[in-house]
Image 1: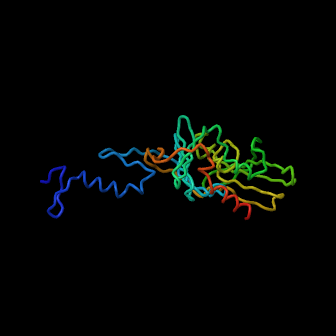
Image 2: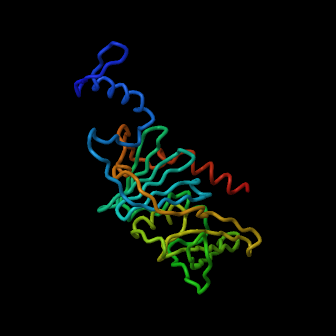
Image 3: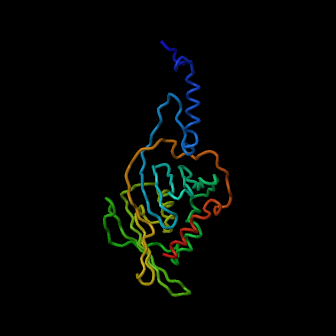
Length: 251
C-alpha cells in the first residue's frame, strides 16, 4: 500500500506536497481575486443576490450582494467595488493598474463626473408616484425628479423604478443608486430613464437585466492582495467614466 504522503508515477516517487505546489503555481495567476481554501477544510458558502445591470454611466456590471457585503464587477474591467459590514467603507479597485481608493460610505454620492451628467439638483428628494409595473419578476414603483438648466432653460425629467422585493441593506442600495447617478429612494433601483427637451429624447441609463439568488464562497467579498493605495479617486476611475460620458453625449 502506498504511504499517505507519497505516490508513484512511472517508477518515480513524488511527494504530494510537491504536486500541490505545482498546482498552486498553475492556478495562481488566474485566481488573483479569490482565496484558495485551506487543505482539508470545507469552504464556507454564503447566500447572496446575483444581479446583472446595464449601466450607461459606469458600464455594465455584475452585483453580488449579501446582508453583510457587496462586490460589483464591471465588465469593462476598469474597476471593482467592495463594501462590507459593519463600517461599510467603500473600496474602489482598478484591477488593471492594481491600485485602490476608499471612502466612508456617507461621502459616496457618485463621482463628480456622474453629478455633472445631470442638471437635476441631487439634494431634491424624488417624488413617489402611484404607478407600478413588473420589471423581470419584481413589482416596481416609479419615482420622479425634474430640473431646469438655468443657462439654457432646458428641462430634464428622471424616472426611477425601484422595488422592495430585493431586500438588501440600505448601504448597498446607496452604492448602487450612486453608481447610477440617482438619489436614494426606499427601494432597490431596477431602471433609470432620463428625458430631456420635454421628453423628445429619452435614454435608459440603468436597466436590470437579471436578478436571482445564488451562493458564493464566504471569502469572495475579501479585499484582494497586491493592490497599492492611492489618495486620488480619479486615478482609480481614470478613462472609464470620461469615455462613457463621451458616448452618452454623442448618442
